[in-house]
Each structure stands twice: as C-alpha cells, then as structure tokens.
Length: 217
Image (cartoon, rainbow, N blue to C red; front, side, top):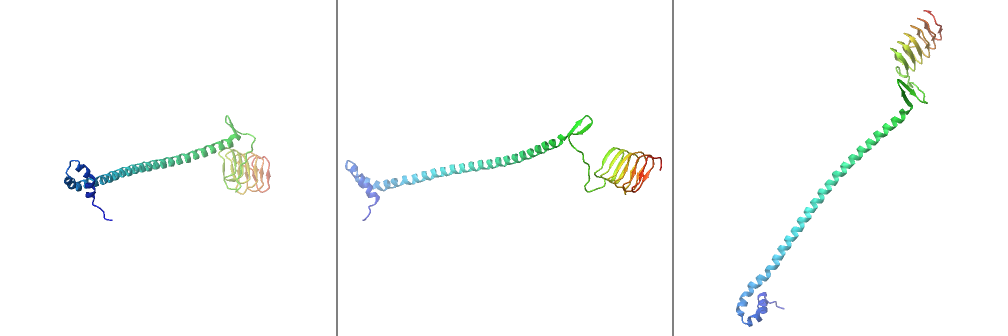
C-alpha cells in the first residue's frame, strides 16, 4: 500500500477549517512548513533528555567521588585504630610485666637500712664454676676475681680457687685451694685442697693440713 506524504495528510486535516472561510491553497502551501514544525519537537525532546541524562550522570559521578572520599577516610581511621590497638597491647604487656615484677619482689622487705628475705632462702651459686661468680662477699676491699662459689668475710682478703671460705684480715686462699678455710687471724694462707687455718698470724696450710691459731707457725 502506498504511503501519502506528510504534507498531504496535514492539508487534509486542515481542509475543514479552509472550507469555513479560509483559503485551501494557503493550507497546501503551509503544509511543508507545518510538517517541518511538527518534526522539531522530537529533536528538542531528545536534546532535553540528553541534558537530563547528563545531569544524572554528573550527579552519580559526584556521589561516587564522595563515596570514594568517605571510603578513604574510613581506611585512614581503621589504620589509626589498628595502631592505637597495638599501642594499647604494648602498654598492657608493660603493666603486666610491672605487676609480675612487683609480685616477685614481694618476698623482699626493706626495714630501714636492712633488706629482709621473708620466708625465703638466699642461694649464691655459679653452676658453670666461672671465676668471679657465685661468691658471697661481706666487707670491703676483698678480691674474689679468681674465685668461684666462695665466701669472703672481713677486710682485704683474697679469695681464689673454688669452694673456699676466708675470714679475717689480709688472708688468702690461693688458686690451688679447694674446699679450704681460713677462719680468722691475719696474713694466713691456704695453698691446696682441704686445708684449714684456725687463726693466728702468718700461718700456711697445704693439702689436708690444719693449722691451729698461732703466731707464724
């Protein structure tokens, strides 16, 4: 079926008005311009629709940027919270160590110038028998650098060897001494194992020798 031109259709629609007193030819002449005017609204509508869609796209892009900024801010806050949590954990560990240390020190009590061990024993030992360690020293100017697991009491005694006891003044347990004792006096010596000087002055005890208190024996 043949299609009629749009201009003829518009002229046909306007014909009744022309019969009422208008000029039919003028309608026919105006038909092409009317058709062109009728085609214009769809283009304007398309442009308006494109403008609307562009506005919607711009709004969505702005919202996306805002969401991205909020996400970045949340990420920074989460990182800061993680760092604060780690610091809190370190603080808790430090406090726990302090509490443990205080609990361990609860066995000690300071009374004036005296340190009291309450319900405790005091053990001084060098399990490796290292020279200079494991010694109990009471008094001033003793030398225990070559001694292990020994005891020096008094003033200016020399403690060497192992497992020796020296008391008095300027007394000496020499390097070869072991499990030997000087109980007192001054300028006495033990030179070997299990020797004993009971006291006196300038006495020397060798292996298994017991020197009584004397003056230069």
